[in-house]
Image (cartoon, rainbow, N blue to C red; front, side):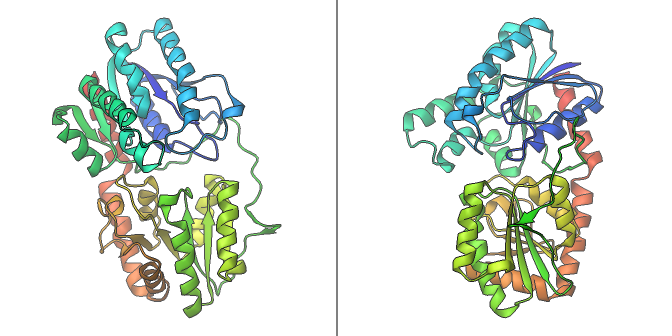
Length: 392
């Protein structure tokens, strides 16, 4: 089976790395598919046997490419459309695996080139236009909604990543036999064709170090407003009053977001008790994860389950997360300490996780067992095989 994967994203850059595209492609290739992966210009090529990465020309003046809908992505999608057509003219693909908004043009190319279409739906774009404050235009939102509905009807297989999206697409009338939910739940080590030369993570000019007396809370992810980073910093300031040996390590964020978060931490008197690293390679994030006593996901709103939740569950570390729909689709009180999305409730949850070792250890054991049972690699591979059977 020859497959064209169309992924309009910055593929393997420190910011916006689409791990879901990587793992989908990796496991599909392991099933014997011959794959071309079309993506944006910036990023590092990765080793995926049976896969050729094709990039559109890089437009540095549009970088950095932000998370979520943006005018930069709309401009970059123009050459993506032409490159998609060029590849379809040059090769005979059995299947096109369209991620996110690339389905909007692949849907119209399908009857011309006669391929089978997989719509990998990581989010609803009309919802994202509102959630990211990209536009308030009802006309524009209606246009994208119509494109989305048309794509859902045209696709031979629709893949979603969480129960909320599953329910959403089934409510639009997608036949359950054409739908498959594949959570972003595996995280094999990623091999770059050329290894990044990465410097040690730094706080100012000093390497990050924590003493044996410190109790470390770790957040690793984006710093977008819905992630609740400000709320987390404010909650940690409350934790420090009771447990001064605790430390907060925040990994991620753009330079501007790091400066803003650092300024908030300093205004609350946290000083070196709160470390904000900026972006770092995944290998370094994993090393810090092993040194943390508690992991946290302080997200304030949203519907899609974050990929990092699965990694946190499998870590063997206790997790504190906000009790919102984005989390409770997967999490419950037996595997995670759920709290209200307020600084006061989050502070209480962090204190409990840091001081009640027995309860924290039990939740961590339950979480790891749950993840191995429900979201193992064999389960992921089975879902990918079923996806390919749908379009065989």
